[in-house]
Image (cartoon, rainbow, N blue to C red; front, side):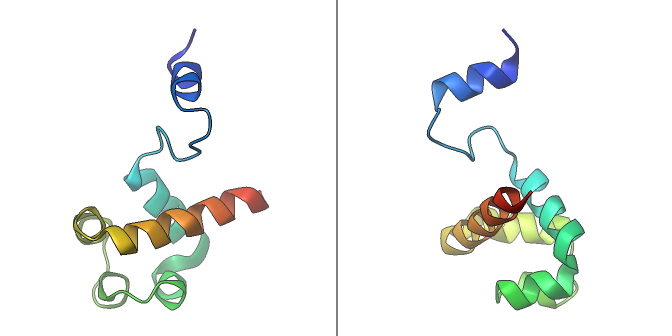
Length: 80
């Protein structure tokens, strides 16, 4: 059994299980760009001199912002 199937069996009702925050953020930046992402989620790390590294640092410390990013990612994945 491969690693991905093991993760799905461990938490079948959690669509975010096993998805890295880096992957989420890179996907959103690819889709919306930094400016578009800042318009959807109003946080300074997306507005002023944005980078993956600084955004990850902020999102790991700030649960409400991480929740919004994860929800936006889930909404994007549903559209695919």
